[in-house]
Image (cartoon, rainbow, N blue to C red; front, side, top):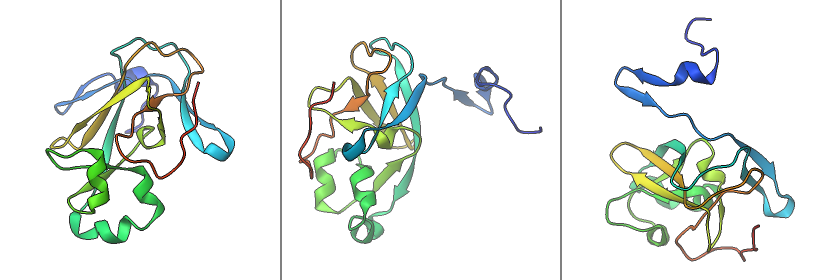
Length: 153
């Protein structure tokens, strides 16, 4: 069993300068025609770090090709002094978040916020307000949407 964690509590602490962050208990749920989303399996208090996701960088020179695929609907802008709307310019780096972050649904009144850490190649997701068990987690995509949003919740 070398290199395997026996349980989540084994991951808490510092290993080679990296600090493990226990994430909220979450699950992927199929919402039918709307696709998959993330739901809370526990009540989450405002301000709690819900998820810390590493990202894969899509280099600027590969954006034109990648942006023509379904991947474009899951990426974040990954340059300083940019906003998500800048994705439509198809210049600069973008990134796809691993973990649950790329499956968060859009809401104009989200229960979560995301923070990009450009140099660290991480995205943090925090609870903006109290999130109840079973509630879907949402963020504001901060860009012109390519779909007609439905009310969540």
